[in-house]
Length: 278
Image (cartoon, rainbow, N blue to C red; front, side, top):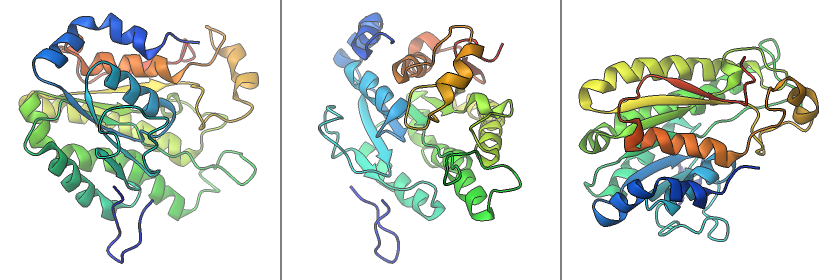
């Protein structure tokens, strides 16, 4: 569905996911034969989000997705995909209360087992260069922080009861750019991801009494649309594994953090970067 603004305007190399589904056969069996688990995933239309939705779906989870783009049934062959998709721009803070209400409506009182805050933006100049702290407009700063930091805060707050009912898991997607100056990621993106990493620790502390685990993953150079054209040529020589990562490799770690295998893991940020952080 499309969520409208108040004025009526719409806001618009790795192993396969199936292999991972087989690895987690025990969890999939539990999902299928006992309680089917539900995940709310933001930024689900492409890249890491799309790979994550596909993996969770193949493992038997129900996916409630959220993206700026409409649902594409050809690329997203999971059950009830169109009915469980919200087309909304989370960088507009006015949309968050209504998005939360729509998720609650779809859950209809059922628990939420995972909230995956994957949506993010990394604006660049017209010629693809990074935006520095000197060249980033205040409008860009606000838009980046609303999506990359504020949305995860408000979604977790708004869905607290549903997560609590499931003893659920929250996974925030940060970035290697949050811990160092990156040649392509701009200042607003990098600092928003650093803030999200700090927020993850705070949330892990605050949500633990409710039985909710909160972790982050920090991808490095992953082959998605966000990757700059020169990334592989410039950065792969400095990555110990000598390659960029695949979205499916990131999805596997997200799946682990949302699974019972990670039941005693909270407050951590897991790097997924082929050793680039070393």
